[in-house]
Length: 162
Image (tube, rainbow, N blue to C red; front, top):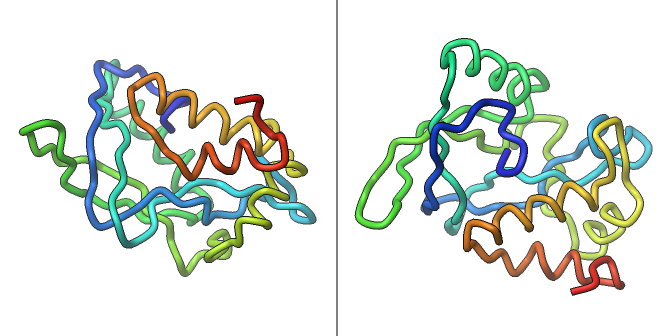
């Protein structure tokens, strides 16, 4: 959602959520992979903390939220959850989509080797799995957010020129 929110963004803020971390823990069997070769998608998984973006929906908010809900909730891969996000000295209540561990889409804890394999080989109607992770990392970096684990996956076996 960081680089492709699908709704007009009135503004965004860098923020941290405690109690969840960004994880390549979801199987993509259509958008960035296939049933035979699923991609590894990001989700918020319990434990740790996650620095990301809080975005204020602009435009026709009810209609934009319907589109967002359809995209994120149709497969049952996520559970919607209101969480507190810290941005500087502000606390912001934010709607998040937490990985649904009971869903068939939840991959569990993938090994680094398996994530690297998926990034190198998985592709679906939305493009390559590698491109999804690369675009996410580039958007995070553009907002001053570093995710060392994502960069490590992108650099593994020459998948990134950085």
